[in-house]
Amino acid sequence: MQVLDGDFEKRDLQGFDGSHPPDAKLIDTCVHCGFCLSTCPSYRVLGKEMDSPRGRIYLMDAINEGEVPLNTATVQHFDSCLGCLACVTTCPSGVQYDKLIRATRYQVERNYPRNWWDGLFRRLIFSLFPYPGLLRVLLVPLWFYQKSGLEKLVRASGLLPRFSPRLAAMESILPRITSKSFGGGLPDVIPAQGERRYRVGVILGCVQRLFFSGVNEATVRVLTANGCEVVIPKSQGCCAALPEHQGQSEQAKALARQMIDSFADTDVDVVIINAAGCGHTLKEYGHILEDDPQYREKAKEFAAKVKDAQEFLATVGLTAKLSSLTDKPLTLVYQDACHLLHGQKISVQPRQLLRQIPGVKLKEPIDAALCCGSAGVYNMLQPDVADDLGQQKVQNLLNTGADLIASANPGCTLQISKHLRQQGKDISIMHPMELLDYSIRGVKLEL
Image (cartoon, rainbow, N blue to C red):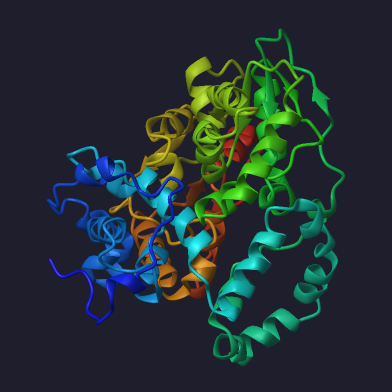
């Protein structure tokens, strides 16, 4: 197969450096069967071989062999990957594409000089989103932007997409700023209700703790109601998911070390996370810090303790009594977050928990395994592809006729909310932990 057109001298080629390039042995496990094509969201939208997992593996091999350079023509195909890992689930040969794309993105960020605007936008994202303290500073101006009418004016004008599609994409998923966003946070230790069964740590997240603080509060209430003493170290920061997924290796390593240190003396049985993308990265700490002699073993031990909230509760069982959420049967559709479904192989457990709520009927959408287009910060970096996927996802969810959508990832919730709004649909999205919390407390939903 001819990978790329173009005339160049081999002596001019610049490819991967010697620090963990994509493993040739992993590349060779791909037999180019094409099973990945139908499940790859970027290939579905773009329709190009090089924007599929198989095509990208061709490119990785060609760059490894010095046949093509690491340049704009090749990097664009690596950038188009959402990292949803649907191909990993589908591949009959067991190709570890997740390891290949991770290694490639590290190489891209080290060796490919991006243009000034792309670099500036990426620096803005990675200097802001992984740091809740900085995000908190923006709450007041964002609140004013929404309440003053500026938001409606900007969106009605249509000027922002013309000036910068990426900034417009960032603005379009801006969550609502509420009084909870300015809250003081949760205590360091919250005792279990009744007999203590477990001592668990809880990770608050970055976007989650500010814009979806109600999800964290609900998670803590559900855990304590089911016999868990909850520990929340105040020194915890970002889990490193956003920089890790985009190849910002040094930043990801620093954040991972900070997270490990924050839980070092807590003596918790497990570490609970309620955001799918964060959970996948936390479980990968052993790989992220494999070259760090001081943290290598600590990272493995920490990762072994990490459990998604739904995964944990489905395993240990609910002890709190559940009540119905409405006075009539409630039809829910559960939206599978990619890093929960494909990354952590968690699909049955959330459904098991939701079905335990009296009166709940679960619907399944078509193409449930297809990414919604959020993919961390992908919907801000590749807005056109993300919008196409978001529209498909929302239409598939709406076609179930469900009364409410359950989503276990803040990025997915923001992406789906955006496309519901753009389609003029008024349907609520709630985290499964919120639904369990309401059921335990006997709070009725207003739909």
